[in-house]
Length: 487
Ligand code: BES
Ligand code: MN
Ligand code: ZN
View 1 (cartoon, rainbow, N blue to C red):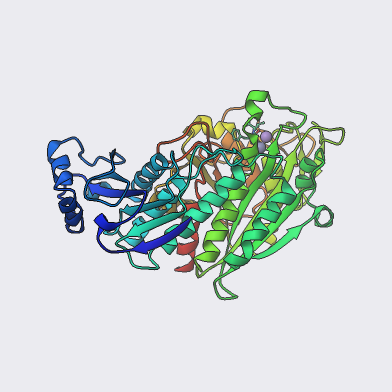
View 2 (view 1 turned 90 degrees about the vertical axis):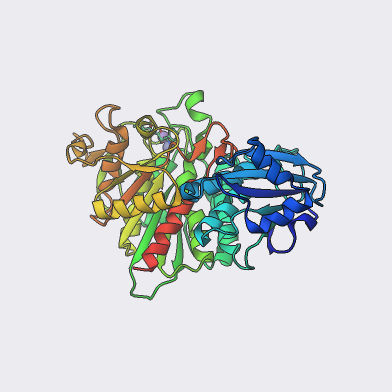
């Protein structure tokens, strides 16, 4: 998709579709009156009739509109101006884009968001560019057809770039997650990231199995040992700040497939488990956006990549693994593997000088029980840092909510035979006991754990985005990084 800023009379645009954003309870914008005149006052009559009021994402399609060169005029509601935020505006353009993508429409123009702040404009563009991309990445005849060319009307050249960067990263993350585990495994994940790294100015470091062993990553390697696919640990560097400036570390769970291991999942529980590397995909997507936007901060992305499989070499219940930081872990459920992977990656982040850490992981079904499918759980060892991450998410219109980290929960991960065990005493509070396990590996650095098991992957489509991977929290991580730079 090429995205171009354009200007000039809307009526003369030779495009397959023109999307026009209309505010609720406001007269038509001055720039749009020309379009109204060209259609013989059709827009004014439409608003006067009450057929269209401009509620958020309200869509109305006028085919071959008289007086216009466009093949289709899509009028979309932006809602009341005072209620417009980054979430609303992305959903508005996303809904229009998803609707238009149902047919092949190579050239689509948007007259939306030209009177918005740069932040809102970026999300409007991001919504339009993500709404038209589907999860059918391997379908010979895709259901959604993204346009070749997207024209953004009424904005300066260069003003489209932040939105394009955001969308490219959200779509990159979604693609990694949507591709099946036969395509995306630790080595191929690394290749996909290596392919985008130079353009984002990211430095890449990859640890293979031998290096992981030399680095004593016994916890991560324990999970990986049942698979024929060798594990990887990938470290990305964006050096946008001074050499002595603090470093933000983003850590991701990259289980490219989670069968559950010997604690095998049911078919129902396993069928979407290609999504279990969404934490890692979110981190690399955010790193790409951070790099391409030239954020003035030092940011490090670290992802642990393994497959959790069943074989004669699988790790077993009762095994005791020694993590990189020296702690011993009794394995009482091989399906609680994400925390074992993150344990070693968090330790590497600490050793590499992370001043503050955020990890993202599709870690527990319990978090989905607690918060539902659309909200990420925040767990932290430091309220101020947690508040910063929560408010970054809120500004982006992404849904995240804190869960308590009372010390009592830590009792549950104590073991009779090792330092800790990899599950709590029962299923209650399972998202929190998992976080308490992770806390053992952050060496008291300010740290926020985001459990994205719900929002990372959708069973059903939303009006503004196809089902499957959502790309949730790429925006939030970029927002945190930008603020990290301006401290
Ligand atoms: N990857 C799963 C968590 C998950 C569940 C992600 C649903 C996305 C959707 C994780 O590795 C897992 O299996 N967790 C177990 C933990 C339990 C064994 C303590 C779970 O949630 O059941
Ligand atoms: Mn699991
Ligand atoms: Zn998992």
